[in-house]
Structures are given as C-alpha cells and as structure tokens.
Image (tube, rainbow, N blue to C red; front, side):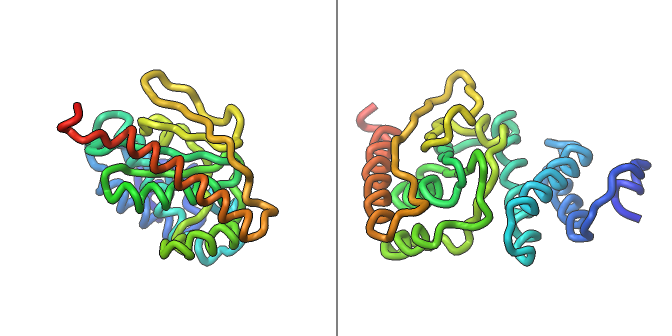
Length: 220
C-alpha cells in the first residue's frame, strides 16, 4: 500500500516506487512548511515534467528529485518560510539548453556563493546543447550534472532578478522584482566558435549584473 492509500486517498498513486520514497523524504524535510498532499502533488508534477522532456529514462529519478526539491525550496522562500541570505537570480530562455545554462554556471562561478542561481526554459528540450557544454568546459566549468528544466511559477516568485533570453512573455510578472531581457543569439545551430561568442557576451553581462547586485557594504 502506498503513502496516498494509507491516508485514505486511493485516487492518488505513484507510478514509480521511488516517487513514494521521495515524497516521504521531502515531507519530513519540509515538515511544518508544506502538507504531505502539497509535496506529493509537487513530486508527481515534477516527475511528469521531467519524464516528458527526458530522452534518457535512466536520469529521470535523479532529475525528478532535484527538480521537486528545488521547486519546493523556491516556494518556501517565496512564502518566507526559508531565509534568502543572498540575492536570487533566475535565467530563462526557451529550451534551457544553452543561454540560460551558460548564464547560470557563469554566475555561480563568478558570484562565488554571493548569489543563488536558477535556470529554466519556457519549452525545455531533452538535453543540453553539446556545443554549449564544450564551450563552458573550455573555461574549466562543468555542466555535466545540469539538465533542462521547465519554467514554473514558484521559481519566478522566489527570484529577486529575472533575466529572460528570447522566451517572449513566458515569465509571470510580480511586483518588486527586477526584470531584464538579454538579446543574445541562440546557440542552437551555431558552430563552436559561434557558441564561444555567445558565451563571452553572457560572461560580460553577468559581470555587470554581479557588479550591480554585490555592492560592497562600504559603498552603501
């Protein structure tokens, strides 16, 4: 008998056994913040989204766990249940396979823990662009553990800054947040030299963004 059935909810079932274990772990982790029903819904929604986009099923379990955990963390941050000690930055492009992934890894690297970064796609692809992975590897940075993620409202709510890159009006607009649109070439279809140019353009923009977000206390 699964977790939902034990609570008298026979209409809700987990299609994979690991999803039940994940829901139980997250229910314990977010105890006092979210109900078990909310967590189960997030786990199932996250699983469905990842499964739909994934080209290799062997990665679905790990990606579902990461995606569901990050979404619940973002929602808790938006509700004020979890502290946000550093600025939250969200990068959004269409496929979350190139531009937004490069922006996220570069911001993480250059920010050195002084910002927290998420990325998402309005229509995520199955896997990252190999030329993007190669261009980032040339800088000594690693995208091997990353994967395209669908844009969800919770990560938008949690962000202080939302940077879009060719995804139109996909992001919901919330007051009090900073929104920017970066006009960048889409790496899809570009050769490695073209991707390098996009990468370097993004790096320059990230450096400017961090300079604005991370004002030294002595300068305030």
